[in-house]
Image (tube, rainbow, N blue to C red; front, side, top):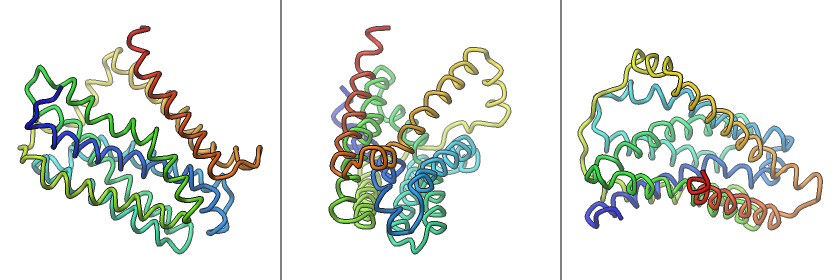
Length: 264
């Protein structure tokens, strides 16, 4: 287990990852309420997941280069701050276009926070405990798939999609405070360069791994992007049933993550 002194910091980073995962996919469970309120088709609401994912994909490799002079704690706070602001503004979006812009803003914050949290989690513990520390940090993302997305869907069906997004924003703000209080100052490390990325992609094993990850995530986001709309249109599923379906999807995914290494 991670050392006791580092555990509050690791749990703070994990909470940040939970917020990141919930915000990135919350619109899946809120598909119907958002579409009805903003007068857009469910498939159009699903594009908000794609907007977030593409923005993250572009910004995640470039953020460490642009912010290379900042210490890691400052990077984390900027990232979770942008994520919080994006979710809060999304909750008061007057139209679909404005909501799309808030998704871009939130994804930029996620792209700053995600890689930074991974690096910070590995650096605040001794080398022999890094694997367990990273498992603790990434556990927040797993919990988001299991609990965060279904919970957002349930709140959207009972309270409305705007209060649901505000709730997610409040959770992200709590993660901001936790990181501010518990994560220690961590100096900036050796910054990545474009040349380093290029050299890594020339390695056959790296290229194969990145390609496999790309295909896997494309499949996952495709399912998440249309799941709510499909269940509602095809089966007339209520918000509660959609929440349960997403919960089952997440639980099975966690089980797969737990057993796949042993099976392999």
